[in-house]
Length: 353
Image 1: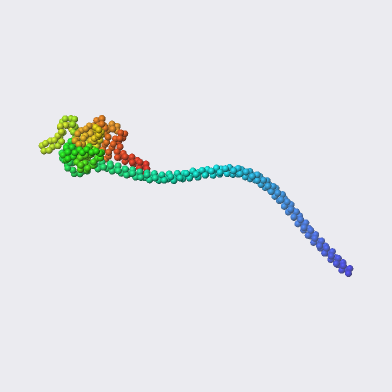
Image 2 (image 1 turned 180 degrees about the horizontal axis):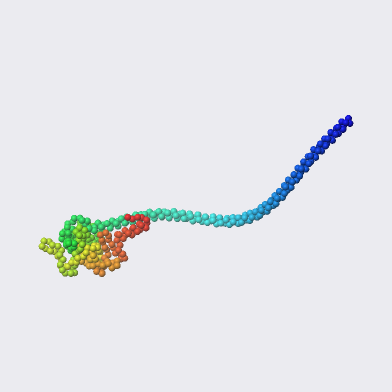
């Protein structure tokens, strides 16, 4: 019994010894872990200290940022106040502008209506000017149409050709006699209307303007068809003899001398005479009466004035294409007005033919 007790005690002691050894080993392991943990803790504390310093720096920066932000907010507040005032003023100005614009819009609508009316009136006026230009050109064409007889066969032209031409000279008193023999006479008129050649022929006469145009056309016809280059004119201020034509053995003549002038710059000239006016013909600066072929005087240009023997002056000139009138300052004509119309149309951007 004592032996089992000893064995039991011995086993118990062995178990204690084994427990003690196991605990010792565990304690040593714990010590090792504790040392490792201490090192980690120390390292962690060092990191915490560094983090603390960083946090302190960040806190400092945050404080500075707060100060700057607060300052910026204050400044922005000032600016916002100023902007608010500016917006109020702008709002008031916008209101004024809206009112002004409303007035402007009303005026614009009214002006637009007026503009459209003016454009319509302008277009109508330009059309009238173009029509006026056409009318002027038609009038100029009238003078060209009545410049000669265009080779037509007329009995009075045949008589003039047979009796009044000697070489290249056309005897103007003879022309007057031939026309008188054919029944042409002076017919007074109360208007300034100029007959066409056909109207003059049908009426068997006309006033001084008509006679001048008609005889001018005869001279042009004789120049074109018979080649005359000179005109013989009766000068009643000089005695002598001017043969008119022969009829068998009878020679008809005037007891006055004559002058011969070149057929050059043949124009109808109208001038004051007495209480009225008169029209005659000019050739080579010599004025003569178309109704009887008598010399009336010499003409001369002095500046813009065409003077008759230095005294009277010509007021109207009619050539084979146009009529010109001296208005006291310049000579105006259909061509003059056509050029003026073309200038106006050109300024308006409207091409004129």
